[in-house]
Amino acid sequence: MVHLFKKHLSLFILASSAVALFLISVLLKKHLTLKEYGELSMLLTYISLIFQIGLLGLEQVMLRYSTLLGKSFSINITVFQLLLVVILLSIFLSTMSMLEYFSRDLWVYLMIIVISSIISMLYYNIYRLTNDFNIAQIASNGWKIILLPIIIINILDIDIEFIIKMTAFSMCIIAVFMLIRFVKNYQIVFYKSNAEHIYFIWFNFFLALLIGAAIGFSDRYLIEYYLNIEQLGEYFYYLTVILFPYALFQTYFGFKELPQFRKEFCLIIFHKKILKTLLYSLVLTFILVVLFITINNTDFLEQYHITNYYLIFILMITGIIKMNYSIFSAAMGAIADKKFFLHNNFFMLIFLIFFFFIFLSIEVITIEKIALIYLFIWMARTIVYYFSIIKIHGNM
Picture 1 (cartoon, one colour):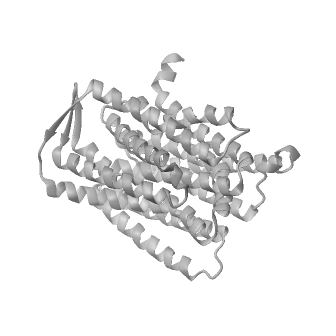
Picture 2: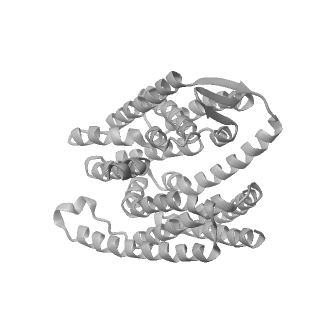
Picture 3: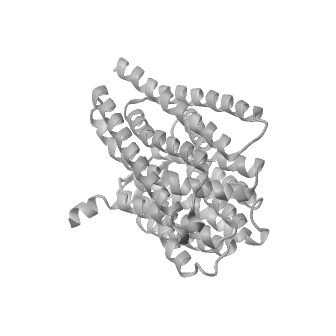
């Protein structure tokens, strides 16, 4: 039992941090104003964005041009120089952007959040080089586990300013721990190689991450911009309670299937896994429907009622698609080459531009219409991946 726990400790850390963030989001729904809850959703969105695209894809380039051998961390000097420039640029732009939504009196805490996010994301990727997934998950998600008990202890007297300060505190602890651990154990060694190839790879990763960020987060910015921050808070709450279970299984299936597809990819097994995942997602949807009906019929949980049934339906279908998309993504990660990823990125870019023009043509913008557009985007992304997998398999 202990051996099994140690073997899957990184997955346990990932799940614990996801549950911690879920509990934070749900608990605070009752204790914050609508405006503050909208600000909370914007804060968490910014942190997620920094982790995903804060270094413009350079961390992925670093993974391919770096090695950890013994006590030496070997990195290409061009990549290192680019990292320094992008880190400084990202800190400045991210902090200034966050000040558009939060009090300027909090600029120090917001900057700490940005710097800590970048440091943690860097070390998350560095420790992936040595397959030290436990430390990597702590770097990426440890702050959520630290923040949860702080929120619970202070839940009766809490506001967005306190949350920002404690988020900065939690993230700073993880970032400092990672810095000390790295400096204590490793020495940086530089080497040179073809810089042109580095720029080409960087562009591919940047484009992929930019598209992923647009699909994953731009709906929240559109709601805040075209509607208001209160409605963003309400939308974020629906995203949390409805999509969280699907996202948890999506992460697990992607984590579990990728190494299996890398060992051996069979189209028949691939289709069986799709059907199996679809069945799981439908069972999960049934369980959620029963749970939401129970909550909506319980008076003392009135603060947590979700009654926008059209939005619930759209998000559940989105959750089912995203959960099954994890199988497609794992397969693509295992068998696709750079050429196919580049083609898929351009296909998705065209789809995003197409859906953006559809969005601009909408006369009356609502949360439900925005959610519906993003449902179609996820459908398009999944379809593109499916036919790419079929084409790649045919050429194998």
